[in-house]
Length: 204
Image 1: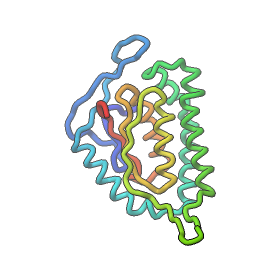
Image 2 (image 1 turned 90 degrees about the horizontal axis):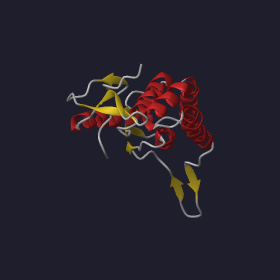
Image 3 (image 1 turned 60 degrees about the vertical axis):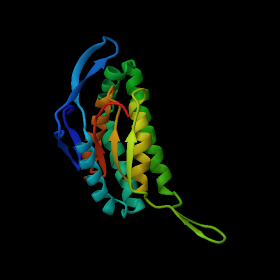
Image 4 (image 1 turned 120 degrees about the vertical axis):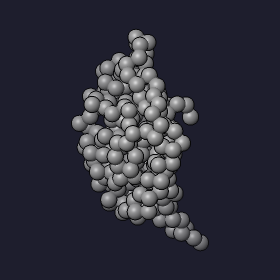
């Protein structure tokens, strides 16, 4: 069962610092289905601190380690396709077959494509008078929309993982459940604690 009243911070499901929530509405019926917790500045500070700690070690992982991690994420993701499709259909309004095949499938496609690019990505490139070295930049903040939720999330998360960055995701308050399922996927796949953090909230 998706845990909508907690956030995923530092590798664990934690209660918000301030208990506050908002209803999630089914667009087909215009009725509230359940509540989702809302984050505060204090929750963001906790997530940023966790991501900064994790960056010290995750940024030093090898290409091979990150390829293997993406491969494990893909493996677990495939087992949750129906769950993702159902969540997207309920919250975003896509017909269930489309949500399973296209919405959930788009996320899987981005993960797989990123893994393939990473296998041969030129992190170092020799130029005639210099060497270009591409390194992890640090903690990444991510805000994603409601209309293609897992597509937009994986477009951001997969490259960040491939580069060795850590991150905090704030998905749309209209479609939180697919993001929470994705957090469960990353946890089961063994993403190190603090590398991926998720906080729900209103607006940008």
